[in-house]
Amino acid sequence: MEKASFMDIMDMIVGESEPIKRIKELIKQIVDTDLTVVIYGESGVGKELVARSLHFQSHRKDFPFVKVNCAALPSELLESELFGYEKGAFTGADGLKPGKFEQANDGTIFLDEIGDMPLTLQSKLLQVLQDGEFSRIGGKKDVKVNTWVVSATNHDLENEVKRGLFREDLFYRLNIIKILVPPLRDRKEDIPILFEHFLSRYGKQFNPDFVLDKEVLDIFFSYHWPGNVREMENYIKRLLVLNDWEQLKEEMLDKIHAAPTRRDMAIAAPDVKAKEKISRDVLEKLIDLGEEKERIISLPSLKEIKKQALLKIEKEVIEEVLKRTNWNKKLAARHLKISYKALLYKIKEADIKKPPDLDKERK
Image 1 (spheres, rainbow, N blue to C red):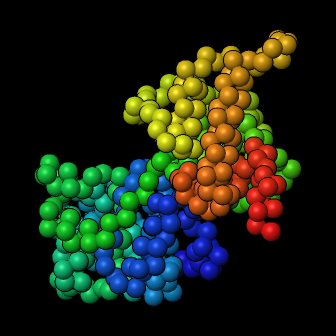
Image 2: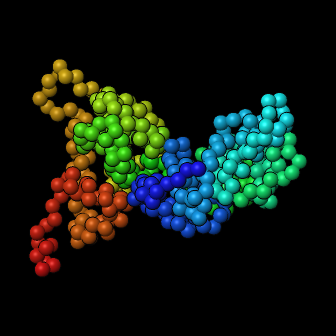
Image 3: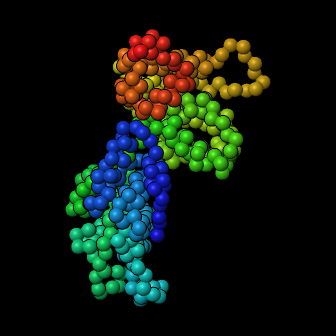
């Protein structure tokens, strides 16, 4: 049985972007309802962390949290894994084995990759949701369970229903509460917070002397993160252990250059996210110049010129928004669509100073 401290629970979902704030608020609203939940999101966004947060903040927190990956096993093995079997049910069944639903009794069962569950098993899962009971393989008696069912998928289940790959009645039973975890590329204001979180988590273990270079964070902002938060976590572990930033940077820039444009980039109102889109476009078009040590060039590289130009644009945008909001930083952060912490970080990094006349006016 897994247990978590209060601090562990608070650290499970890291970020201060609006989507993450909404998820945290939704979790508080539903943790004691026992309503079925489906967590949607791409691979690596942190769906399991959301499921754990649901469990460990609920009235079931002192009972088991049991995870089952529905895509990892063939149909026959998945059935015995979920529902267990009786002695003699099949060759090799030398004794009774309780399934994951029984192990999760009074707790939470997390059905990861629910969209990959075979149709043959979906009817049995529906019975559990409807009646709170099932029979083990080879069993004659029904087993009653009291389990909170939380699922996750990177599929569009509604579309799977239309394609005949997922039962419509099961979809409506599971999908009472829907939580959408956005990809990291759509909440880049969380990157500095995630970076700080992972450095704090792994720094002492792998590299206590590691110093964060601003260039690292700039590249992390520009990268499109196809593997989402899990990919970022793995990159930071690698960086701490191997201390190979130059090689990692080149790999990331190569991927940025190779990545297809996801949508037309448009510049509208002053928006730091627009700056991030510009950065991505610029970096996608960069030729890998390298940084050969033997080459000594007195003039800055084109990459450096573009980087400095983008930083200048960002600084001017932030200064203008701060001016319009009379240096109300919380209001400015809302206008810029970034978190308050991210704005403070950018003000410090860009060395933006508050005009002295504003302080005089308040006095």
